[in-house]
Image 1 (cartoon, rainbow, N blue to C red):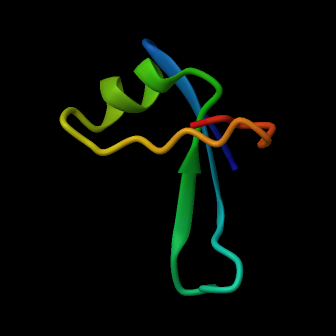
Image 2 (spheres, rainbow, N blue to C red):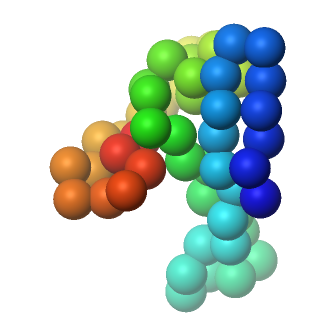
Length: 51
């Protein structure tokens, strides 16, 4: 699911293989910081949504 915000854009998907969890992903790290201040952001260079 894509979520459009005033100050960002994120994607929420089921975590694989942990189907009871979700991943919240973004192409811009600041979008995650705007939504979740102080969160730990992981960078994955090979992913389509890098953060």
